[in-house]
Length: 450
Ligand SMILES: Cc1cc2nc3c(=O)[nH]c(=O)nc-3n(C[C@H](O)[C@H](O)[C@H](O)COP(=O)(O)OP(=O)(O)OC[C@H]3O[C@@H](n4cnc5c(N)ncnc54)[C@H](O)[C@@H]3O)c2cc1C
Image (cartoon, rainbow, N blue to C red):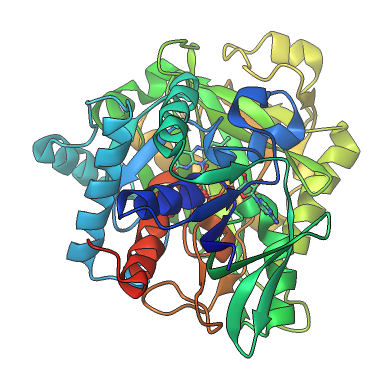
């Protein structure tokens, strides 16, 4: 064997797997990343945004969500108490590497009050605690994590794993894109969303069972920060669930960014929108997504293709993402540059094309989104203003979920699959925690002193 463990993907999941392994008696570990090293990554480059040392975490908003209900599905593998303990200890590692001390959502009295008010508005508030790192600080924390690994774990960047190698249902190593074969006793695969297609193909060739996940489609809403202030000052981000009147569909808010910016994202040839916020640099606006889940069964069963189709339709009409004032959408007319210029909410993504989202979304999605905005108005007056901006489309693609044991091992012995790419997490803290889980299982088998 060349190494005890190979970790594929240097996002939060892979980094925390490598770090945990290094902390337990230093087995020989190789961490392989297809993208650039952290210092070489540029936010404006579409590929660097998601790939490279630090993974999708590098330019993220850096919200560490300390909740068993949000950010992934690790509750399917651990009891709630054990998961909360794991999340807290993983969060401690972020703090030890420079994450800020303040945690939002600690006050139960404030949460209860908000939760009651949400209920009277037909909304359900999911309580959670959040530590906000901020985009500009993500890089320095990742740098410190990288320094912690230096000399203890071998790292290769600009190095793509082509195949996972197995013999008689045991993992034996990996083959790189350049043909080099590296052998190891264990492989931990953590390819994230950007490696999801590759993971799906490798899973199929190894005979691993996978489950299709729904796709979440919707808009990014942008409005003056003052409108959401009462909520964001208390809990930073509010996860709100709404069941639409017309369709009884579950609609939810996602990724709220007080004083943040709307940004673009590239997904399989389409340009979609997302949002983030800095710790110090503040815009006048708050943004958040409103998403509707879509799943399909027969004869069509490819939610990702459906999401891409909607995203490409927006790009076809707008040459990129579309922006529309809520007032224009409700009045049945497109937004124009002049109308956006007159809008009281100043867009933080001015390059989005003024247009008409009713040409993009199916009736079901549009109706769900409008009904949720109406409900939100009762919780935060001003949300349903004609000056509220809607950017389309925001799509959340989730990787197919791989069938895994309680230790996150696949049915190929000593092959572990973790993080967003395995379809078991959707956020920084749960992805990192999944790395710790897999590493702990390997430590036991390597019989390293714990
Ligand atoms: C703009 C934005 C903001 C976000 N904000 C937040 C937030 O505030 N809070 C939150 O909890 N989450 C946030 N997220 C989500 C979060 O970043 C992800 O959930 C998290 O990074 C997933 O970690 P991961 O390690 O599983 O995957 P990733 O971070 O995607 O890392 C996977 C890595 O594997 C590499 N890789 C893939 N295939 C191969 C291969 N074949 N060979 C070698 N390397 C490979 C990729 O290049 C990538 O670097 C945000 C995401 C984005 C894009």
